[in-house]
Image 1 (tube, rainbow, N blue to C red):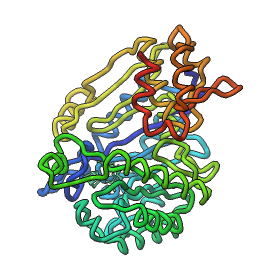
Image 2 (image 1 turned 30 degrees about the vertical axis):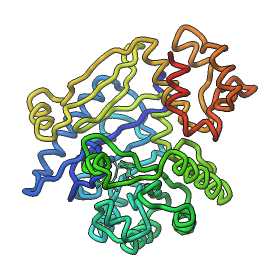
Image 3 (image 1 turned 30 degrees about the horizontal axis):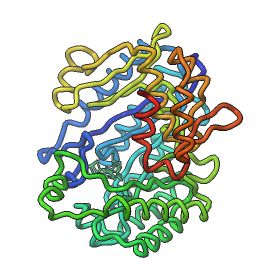
Length: 383
Ligand SMILES: C[S@@+](CC[C@H](N)C(=O)[O-])C[C@H]1O[C@@H](n2cnc3c(N)ncnc32)[C@H](O)[C@@H]1O
Ligand code: SF4
C-alpha cells in the first residue's frame, strides 16, 4: 500500500430517531438528546490519532454512515471535514458521501451539508409503497421520500438511494413496477438490498413466530433475477452484488473496501484497515456510543481492536470483498497476498457449475447466476 493508493475515512454517526425493526446496524435512539459538540470533539481526537498512525496519505473518499448522519448539524459535518483536511491531503476529486433518511426535516439540511463539503448523498428510501414503509417501521411516506430525492437532485450532482426488496408478500409484478419507478427517479446509482432477517431484531422474533413471512429462496431468486434484468436494461448494471450504477458512477468509497485498500474508521463501532510499517492492521472501536466517548476522552481514541493481520487473513479478506464485485479479483494479487495461488481444482469445479468465470487478464469473478450463492463460493475458495 503506497502513499498514493486510494485512502478513505469512514465516520460513524450512530443515532437514529427510531429503531427500524429489521435493522441490526450499530444504531441507537437517545430520547433525551445528545451533546453533539462533545461527540464532535471526540471525532476530532480520533481523526488526529488515526493521522498520527498513517500520516502523509491523500484522502480520496469520506463517508458519513450510520445510524442517521443526516441528523447531525451541518456545522458538525463541517468541523469534521475541516479536521480531516488539517491532518491529511485531500484529493481534488474527493467523494464526500453522507447517508440521509428521506424525511422533510432532514432534507432542509441538505443545503447546509453541501456548503460543508458533502458532494454525494445516499438516501434510505427503502420502499415506494406506503404500506411497506409502515411495516418496515419507517417514519416517512413514499411521497416524502420522493420529495427528499427531488431536493437531493437539486443540490447534489451525485445521489443514490437504497431500496429493500424481497419483502413480505411482494410479488414480481409489484416489485417490477416499484423498481421502474425508482429508476425513473434515480440518477446514476441505486443500492438494492434483499431483506435479511437479522438475529436480535424485532423482525427476527416475528419471523420465528411465523408472523412475518418473507419470500422463500426460489421466490427471492426470481426477484433477484428480475432486478438484474430491469436494471441491466435501464443502463444501471450491478457492479457489486447489491449496487447498481451507470458507467463511472460507482460509489468510490465502497470500492475502496471491496478492492482491499486502506480506510480509517472513526466513531463508535467503526472498523478500519490501515497499512502501518508494511503490515495491514485491523482496527475497531467501542460500539457503545457513551463508552466510546469516555474512552476517547481518556485515551485519545476509542479503539478496542488493533490487530496485525496475517498474510492469510489479508488474502481471505481480499477474496471475500473482491468477489462481491462484478469485476471480481486479480488472481495474481491474491497469490501475492496469500503466498499461494487459489486451488485450480476448486476453480475448475465452480466454473463447471457455472458459478465463476476466469478472464484472459487473470481475473476471477462470480457469474450473475453464481451471485445468489456468493457466500458458498467464497467459503469454498477460501477453505
Ligand atoms: C446504515 S443503513 C441506513 C441508513 C439510514 N439510516 C436509513 O435508514 O435510511 C444502510 C442501508 O442498509 C439497508 N438495510 C439495513 N438493514 C437491512 C436488512 N435487514 N435487510 C436489507 N437491507 C437492510 C437499508 O437499505 C439501509 O438504507
Ligand atoms: S435502517 Fe437506518 S434509520 Fe433505521 S434503525 Fe437502521 S440505521 Fe437507523
